[in-house]
Image (cartoon, rainbow, N blue to C red; front, side, top):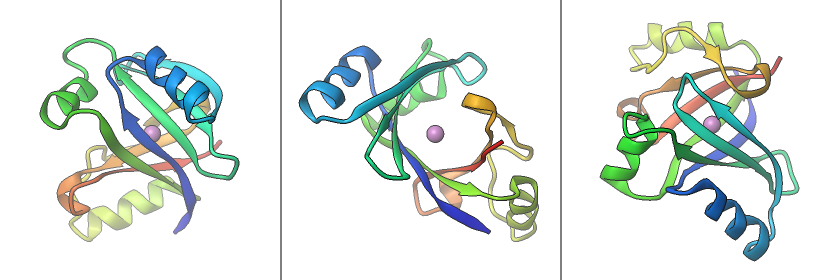
Length: 134
Ligand code: CO
């Protein structure tokens, strides 16, 4: 069902400042910045040298879900993303088991990936992103 941890998402107030810290101070290599209009976030991926990347997320506007997260919980780990081979099949299986899903159907993520989120209610408090690569 699962094919490895793809990335860990970190909510930040200012993406450019956070990229500077992660690149210049911590030493992670930036891979690219994407604007995800539909999800109201601007994100940057950084390499950890292995399969698992870091995704920094900055809200675009006060109605962004990431803005709401920052308001209630502050900066920090926002979600983790696990790669799956067949996202539709995984969603159907989780739904059948009564898992609370944010997305019933996958939507388009960065770089043509299919993504869907599982609600923190069903994961002991952490937003879980399922991701299928094209
Ligand atoms: Co993510």
